[in-house]
Length: 97
Image 1: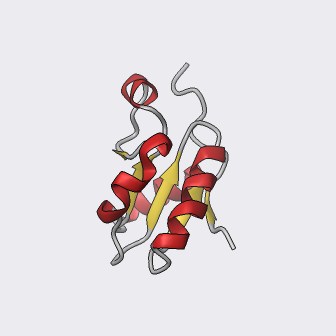
Image 2: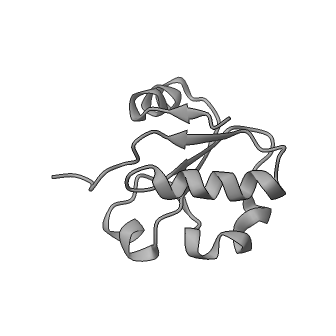
């Protein structure tokens, strides 16, 4: 089952000082154009980054709409089942207007 977190809940975690790893699976150009502080681990090169996943805290994965992040989590869960993944529901959108 895929766990999800809303952008509001993620902001609450930040305010509460909760520890978590934030991962952006968009491509470098997207990340550069609008970065919310996540580590860049593009979906196109996902397997290269598996060793960077943390197992001692939740891992929140995001993209533009929440679709690529779901795919990333599904792929990573196969090779890193001990990681506590959360998908950022509906992604981060297009960034600031």
